[in-house]
Image (tube, rainbow, N blue to C red; front, side):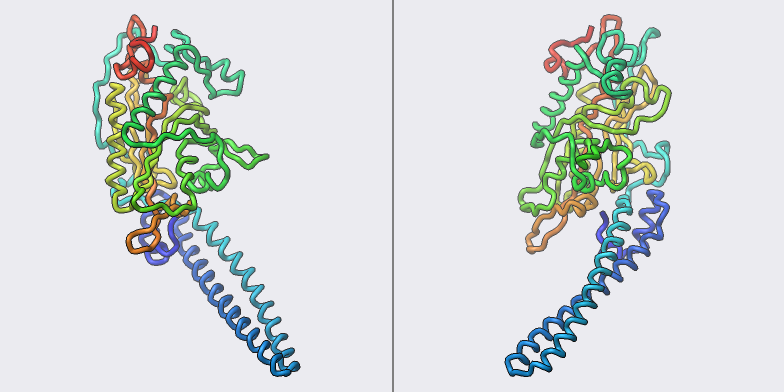
Length: 423
């Protein structure tokens, strides 16, 4: 959530930046400023009446002490009228504060100055492409055929157990998932990230804190009776670990990683874009999150990009890094880099990671602060990245490494998987 003080002092700038994200209700900035002025006015009036009530109460005491009961009674009537006016003002203030909050949470984060203009994924900026795209034989097939051939995932039984988009991994398919998760976590903890195993459901406050609510409620599975949400990513619970806390400055940066199952209701429609593991409702992912000092925020962001890149290099997958344009960015992000790996059998790029800097957008909602050397509290910056999402990584590993003798796994996975090939 943007800070009201910043909006008030930089209204035109805020309008210009949110327009870069193609936010249509730019004039809501004026509504927010007007509501803020109303809130501040009502607070002053409420405080003025409270001061008058306090003064009158002292006068009543003095009058009673002097035995001037009639004068004291008149003053009491005045106080009663003042309290009635104060109660009305308090109700107006509460309503105005709610309206202000409701408008504030609708505003997206401001995109960083380096964010390219554009509305569609095709307008994202490719900042790097690396790795060698494999040349497959004429008999090569996409991963959904390889999954059947080697009996790795059963979509039919998954659909029977739950529904479409809930794959059942089995045998060597389940083992490969476990190997990837184990490797990703080891890679992250070796880089100084503390490992967590979070709950798979969060409350409304946690979903609100990271920006899933009110922006993405339609994409989350909602356990209505208990008011809980199945997590779309481990970012949600682990970032909220520090909600409503003041962190010691010397503790920054705080580096966290977690594996979790992830749940997303959106799954696309038809065609190759959603076939097999390309898009599912439940998937496994390892996440990295950092809480950092605002001064180092973008330096850390680049370090996280480099960290994710190291994973893809180790997996020997061809990849590219994109800087997302304003129209393709998430509601909460200030700057996002996407990683895509090349699927040789499908002959297209598949997204496997997003690495984002949210600046103070999330931490303002969660009130995650630190106390600086001057003794004043400041909001930390939050960042997160997929490290990595498994479905499309597995799809590309299968497709790009298929041979007549099986699926040749990259060297880094041999020990984790217990073999160098799936056959």
